[in-house]
Length: 296
Image (cartoon, rainbow, N blue to C red):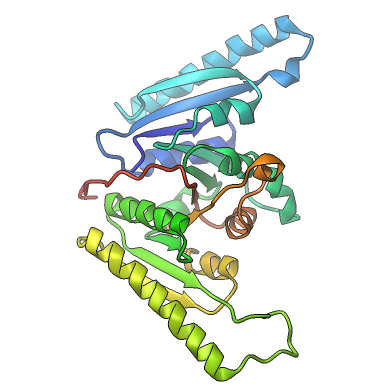
């Protein structure tokens, strides 16, 4: 479990969705919840007076929203802060291995590739800790979701995502579904037909991988109801289908360096582009602290 939760808030519908999700998500007594509003200074280049007026107005708006949260959810917020600067830079600076950064995103319409440059996607690629990206949807639909889904592939980062997902499932009091997808070599080459014995051996190997990961997490969390799914499909397609009605999808991303840091790994990036449910992207620096059952 993260020790801190920071919600990116700017008054938009997407930000409200992120805030509502964070307020619904159970946290243990050590997990603080803060609002962070960033006023984009690039909108006021060369006009210091306009920036000062906008800063005062935004501070008032943030204060009013924090007061309303306190009225509706007493004690839920530990604080709220207004920062002035470049949103991506200011938000990234607030990320740490034990801080969950929550950002909302509007309904996905039109070409999906453009969401590769969305704030949520860029934060997930550059953050120093886990990032939750929450889509805007009807409140009733959000409340009807249940279960935590996590994708694994046998890598260390996937094991970290699995432990993170297990902790979230414990706190939510919901089941955990562990998904492993695989495809035979050259799946896009219709004229290449893999040998049946080879395919069967691959199926068995992937099943063994999944069973081993599930066995380990069951030993660590004996109180948790865990299901597993072995899918012979594209990981993005498989995870999206399995998480369609889940309350959360968790994936790992090894995160890149240099100019490539603008992009996530292929699976996590594809899921962010085609967001169906709240997704948490876990990077290699994430600290996972075992959660206590809250009885929810």
